[in-house]
Length: 275
Ligand SMILES: Nc1ncnc2c1ncn2[C@@H]1O[C@H](COP(=O)(O)OP(=O)(O)OP(=O)(O)O)[C@@H](O)[C@H]1O
Ligand SMILES: [Mg+2]
Image (cartoon, rainbow, N blue to C red; front, side, top):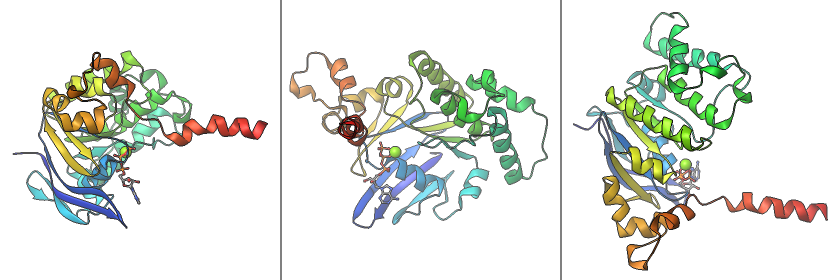
């Protein structure tokens, strides 16, 4: 049986349909990718799964039980943890204390007594940020801050981990190490749902991939199947096998991810002001 089922979920924000009858499942011990263009509804799906967003219609089931109306903390108690697309750490607290807070909250939720700090250092070691343990969270590099988010999740020993663009800010070797860590976590039986724009990482580590476009699941399958799907190629990967592409790898990376046009405009606007 699937660990998590998203069943015919719809989310409407006024006239915008952010999620449009999306159905997909997540298996234990697997990494599932949720990919799609900017604004496709990926983060909104995460919000529905974790309880931050009430769906307009549809259901979410964990271990076969309907959790659609369950509050966030009760989902956390059942072993769900997530990272955010925008970093959410306590900037003035040290990296170690950020994980300590997460651990204390989790133990409070579970009604457990606080134990020694060794658990915290083990988590920092595992994600590879032990060298920043005493530094304020807002002073560490973005990639390390993303790993801190992961460490905060792992402090609660979740069975389902939802990661929203976890590799942004990581360089190539850090991304490789991160992929290995994810595989290691699933070998312990954890399930991971990952929203990610780095297609090399997605294709290398995911067991299954679901593709969203305008809120709809347009494809689901193994990485090779998804990559070969013409609908996905058109909607997201930016090419089609029918387009006589000589260098598919180059074309694919060229088109991912799309930069925010506003960010690109800022230097031009700044130049205008200086003039
Ligand atoms: N709180 C909100 N109120 C109104 N519209 C929203 C809200 N949150 C998201 N949307 C809209 O819903 C759609 C899906 O947004 P969402 O953030 O889920 O996309 P995404 O796939 O995560 O995109 P990205 O890759 O850019 O992170 C977009 O059109 C977005 O503008
Ligand atoms: Mg998003």
